[in-house]
Length: 299
Image (cartoon, rainbow, N blue to C red):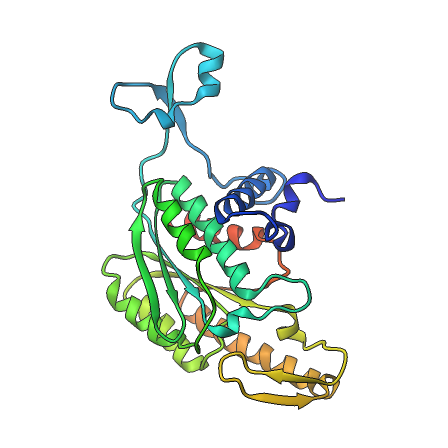
């Protein structure tokens, strides 16, 4: 039986909550609540200590629970800013609209992960930026570490509609040139593009000394092709259609998808890039663990 916190890591449950900010907060709080029951309990996502309130301090940082016990005002004293600048690159191309059955779409899943990561990083006083893209860059929001920045990021994520074809590599190269200071780049995409082009773009980031995490997000049916009957399959980006009996090509399809993922994974290992294949049925804690693991290695 699942404990309470686990339900907020389930994509289908979280997707039914109203409002991106509530969704992001519940995912992070569910994750934090479960940290002490996991191998990752050593990760720090809380403030370090308290200090007495001084004139000019932000009253929003007052710990009212401590005040209730001591009748004194204390500020949550966070650790020094790490100066980490993170860039979330969110694929919003037409293929990200795909969903099988009652699952969330790839874009909804990637958006929820982006929202939760934004919430977590800003809570840790990191600076977070956002890039939305399809065949070109849609919007670039530079990194900020102020708490009010969360609303800006979540509004942009929630407002995305999947459209157009994918051109991952162009966006990777463009951002690799735009980001002047070493940062952490987090890519959330189905990577339905040419493998060599994607790898070239990822290496461009590493050449410029950026740290990189790749979340390769697919629907479970895109990995196993476990469709029950004859069907017409339509390319969501080009509109091209094909009629086939899934059981006839299931093994070949799964092998090709696996080989593509293996090729990306191998190139990432060679360039010291963190690569995580995730499907839309995967609880959100896998992505949050991956981020915390990377952050701990950086500092």
